[in-house]
Length: 122
Length: 433
Image (cartoon, rainbow over all chains, first blue to last red):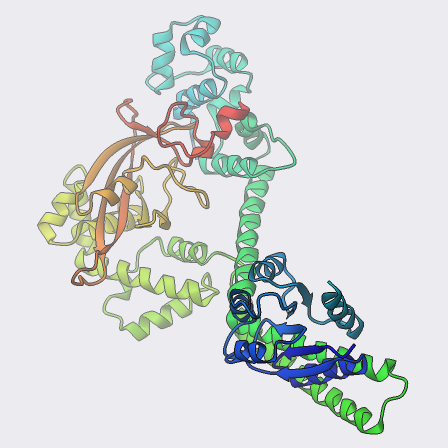
């Protein structure tokens, strides 16, 4: 496929595993691990898909997503949110913030791969 | 407890629940309405055939009118009925049930109390899970490790041609994550152990404090000049207090009651109570003690100095009941909101203004009480900061009802008053009678 995905996640071994399976699927993968400057990294890279963890050091995934949706250049980038919380209110919060998809930890490799593929197609 | 002298009150309560007019009942049993009125206000004794006739007309057993059941038990039964969802208990026959099966009635009331306490515990734990930032972070970290392990294991299992370099790397990651997961789980268990206090939340701290106060009859005169450390030791050794929250609350109350005892010694209170009718404002004036302290002290010493003990309730500025010394016939709700017509709450809108009011507690006993209430500021005065208030109400039972009391209830759901501007919810008695 040759498309770009940016993984924003602070757990290094999750980053490594996701990077591996996406790379094997033909994606070009970039990673970032804190919330402080995540918006700037997305704005600069303008990836085809962002995988964004909710709990990040420095700034929450919800806040990052809201800022991405407020900015013209990042408004339409598909974002897959990852969270350890699976309650309805968490899903609603993600949707309100502008998430394209919502995935609850722990997830399988196949689920992540399918979600990313679908986001690019849609 | 002998209750035959209150048969008239029970007849009145049963008649109101059955929605029968006084004149109609009188006619059915062959007496005048005015005579029935005297009976209902306990000014004429009743027994024999007339009692049997009235019982028959009201559809109850005569023994229920002559002996009755304990008012608090009935209030608790009605509370239990009000919370019933899938069934419709025969609320109008609560007294009959309590009279015929007192043991089972007490069991239902106790199990209802226990259920409400457990519901409180569940709500507390849910709140902790939802709002405890440390717990939320720990759970998130553990789930992240589980995710990393699952994802890495999936790669190792599903990737057919995995380079040795990658394979070693993922094996190392698995090892690291499994170790971190084990450590995280241990830390989480340790945290929950510390925060759990094992029995914390299983009972309401207020209930434990009240049980301890009851065990000491609200009197801590013997603590005299004991130091704060000695008071803390005293509280720590109280078997009723099983949680840190309950011990903290108890220490505050014990210190206050001990201070009351020092300001208003029991010998002086005995003399005052011998001198005539209870006049809290006069005691406060003579001694210089705050009226709230006088009300607390009168309630505390009444058990040992008077044949008829006094009750006491205290609430904060939000109207939450924080202290209850029960008195016969004046049912104080355990969980639901109390009657807003109590002077206890009126005092909150008139700080530092003592209120005195005679109340008639509606219900099967319909007894009268003289109530004194006052709200006083707590804490130190601060510039430009409105004070917070605590309100106290002393409840003095009156032997003979004279119909002069303002009708009040315990809580809306078990109050039979038809017309009440303060009603928050429909009365269970009106709805199911």
